[in-house]
Amino acid sequence: MAYRGSIIGCGRIGSTIDDEQVDRPQFRYPWAHAPAIIEAKGVELVAASDLREEQLADFKHRWGVTALYSDYREMIKKEKPDIVCITTKVEERAEVVIGAAEAGVKAIYATKPMCRSLAEADAMIETCRKHGTILAIACHKNWSPWFQACLKAIKEGEIGTFSSMACNYGWNLSNGHSHTLALFRLFAEAPAKWVFGHMDSDEAAARNSDLSGTGMIYYENGIRGFLNTGGWLNIDFIGLDGWISARNEHADFEMWGRHPRTREPIRRQFPNPKRPRSSQQAAIEGLVNNLDEDTEPLCPGEYGREALEIAIGLRESHRQEGKKIELPLADRNLRIG
Image 1 (cartoon, rainbow, N blue to C red):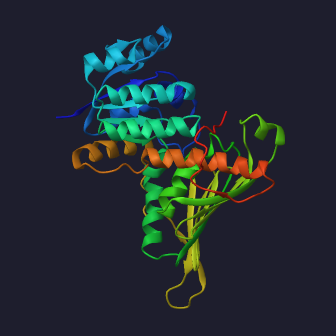
Image 2 (image 1 turned 45 degrees about the horizontal axis):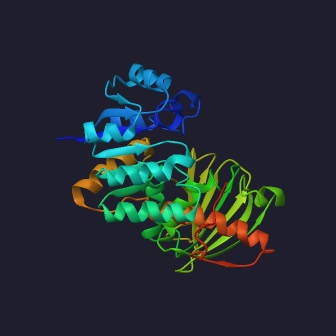
Image 3 (image 1 turned 45 degrees about the vertical axis):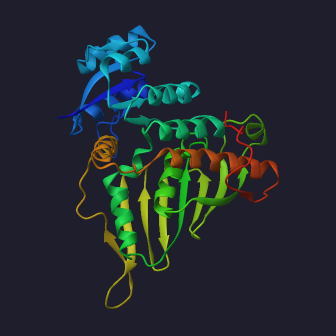
C-alpha cells in the first residue's frame, strides 16, 4: 500500500518550477515537488494546501488533485498524509514544519533554506524528534545518482585519500549555497568545526541578507570545504591522488586519477554509465525507504541547520575581520535575512 503524500505551498517549488527549465538538460524532470511525488514509487499525491485560491486552481488543473485546502492543519486532520512537502515562504517554514510534526505527520520534506534563525532550526529539529517525525531538507542533490556515484568512487579510493571540496557558485550563501553546504556535509561525513570568511559587501553583511563572498569550512575529521562566489556551480572533490569535477550546474562530470600500471594522470568517463534521473524523485523515494526501514534521510534537518549555521558563521567572521568562528554558535538568536 502506498504512503499518502501532500503539498503545503502550491507555488513555484511545489508545482510550477518545471515550466522554467527550458533547454537545460542537466535538470532532470520532475523538479517540482508535486510531480516528483506523482512519479515516485511507494507514494500517492492525495492533497494540497495553499493560502492563494489561484494557486490551488492551477494545482488542480495540473495534477488532478481535488482535495485542496486553504488551511494546512485542516488538510492534515482530514487527509492524514504520511509525507508532507513544505514549500512555503521561508518566513513561514518553521511554524508550518512544527505544526505538521505536532499533527502527527510521519515524514516532512521541507525546501531550503531551512529557516532564518538558528533558534527556529533548533525548534524544528527538536519538535520532529519529539514526535517521531522524519525531517528531511530538500537539498536534493544529496540524492542525485551522479553525486552518489561521486561519493561511492571516493569511498572506494578512486582519487586517493579524500581531503577537500571546492565550489564556485554565483548565488548567495544564505540561499543558493544551501545545496552546496548540505552536499559538503554528506561528503565530509562529519560536522563542521569552524569557519572563516570574507563577504563581498559590508552593507549586505550588516543587513543580514544577500551574502556572497569567500569562505573556508573545517570539518571535525580534517576535511576542508571552500566556497567562492562566481562561476556556474562548479564543484571539485579533491583527493591526494586525483579529483572529481562537476561542471556547468552539474551537467558534466569527470574524474581524474592515475593509470593503474603507468601511474600517469588520466581522465575517465564519469559516471559510467550515465543514468539520468530526477534527484527530486529520488529524494521522495528515499523518504519512502526511510519510513519503511526506520532510517535517516540523506539530508536530515541537522544538515539544513548546519548550512544555515555556516552561512551565519562566515558572516560573523567577516564582521570580526576574518576571525575563525567556532561551531556550533553559542548565540541561537543569530539569523540570516
